[in-house]
Image (cartoon, rainbow, N blue to C red; front, side, top):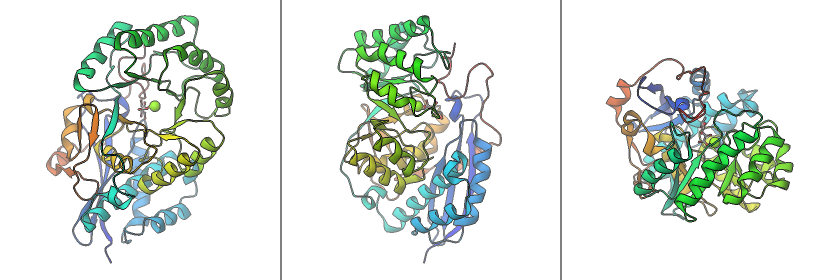
Length: 391
Ligand SMILES: O=C(O)[C@H](O)[C@@H](O)[C@H](O)[C@H](O)CO
Ligand SMILES: [Mg+2]
């Protein structure tokens, strides 16, 4: 029986190098098996780096010395101990990292990519959408000319938040500015480019509806988190008055959360995040629930390379895959060089086909990037926006 012999938790970062503010640090767990193989997992940060790092120590107490093939058992064991798990983003994130790393080990032990253990390859080309591409863009022309650079790289879908520093409420001027940006993107880039509108859960219901109605005419692929996440009942009204499909999920924690949303018709496109909703097997379960209600999957993927690799392994197997989020082309070099194995070419992701998650760590670089502390903080710009856009 192979067990988890040692656990290493890495906080990595390179202060000063431009990075998405919410992901200027990343958290990686490395599990070493009794047979010498290593598996990697990742947890999200966003103003919670140190609490999540600390939570990973709690997960370690449960997972250490266990047989990592027993994913269900180990997950349930942590569930039993972690009284607040069902409500804790930090605990669920920490747990997810261990789950993902366990799969990396399992795949490596069996000599096969993780997707082969989850139903096999259904999608071989994974269409990506670009995010992070619009840093410092404020005016319609800024957005259009930056998007054109990404179209040259092969992207055909763009997510962006055109709402600047409007929060809770938005006035006519704020709506007009957003409309100008979205309308310029549509008219300059054409009907074949998909526009994905990100609201970052910033509005209360009435204002979200105003925004949604104003943008419907530009036919976005979806509108994301239009309403503050805890005001989810507002989604019923939102969906009554706005035609654009609703996407959300990056702040939901488990399949039961997703089951409530999808079964009540509160969401169309589900953006679960493997690193904060219990990892790979839960992602398969969530996707199955969503599929049963006719929903599509577009996994949230805003952190580091282990997250991307884990997510792609699930994407490969999905019959209800829509599109995959990607920040890769706006990453700083340190993040790009940490792991090799998957590619993004011509706006599509491809895995290496190597065993496990299919990635290899540059361990020397990892050692160099070890960092201790919270991610960057800017009083004037919350960490969840693309930098230079909250004005
Ligand atoms: O959809 C997304 O990619 C996210 O909303 C990001 O834009 C977040 O701001 C970040 O993930 C914060 O955790
Ligand atoms: Mg989002």
